[in-house]
Length: 102
Image 1 (tube, one colour):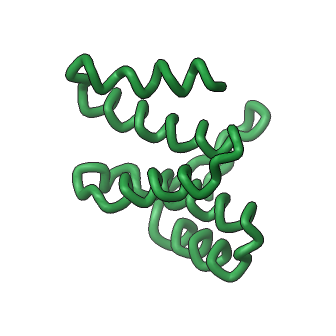
Image 2 (tube, one colour):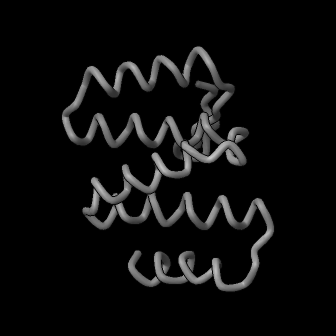
Image 3 (cartoon, helix red, strand yellow):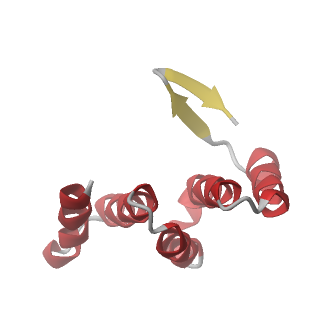
């Protein structure tokens, strides 16, 4: 994970397309959490969420924020975030080669 995180972070140096810019920042945030840096992951996701240019991706971002709240045992915040994702966005979660519409 550490080398993948470094690679995604380096994308910024190459004037990425909008999609690559979002995906690299999003993946770095997720990888931070998987490496045990949950608070950093949450901060990075919240920064992405605050950028209007990523509004088409707010559902994915909010879903990951909800997962972090759950992992931090902040269950009420997790439920609120999952409810928001469920009622506001058309988000698909890939789970073991299945797409689940949330």
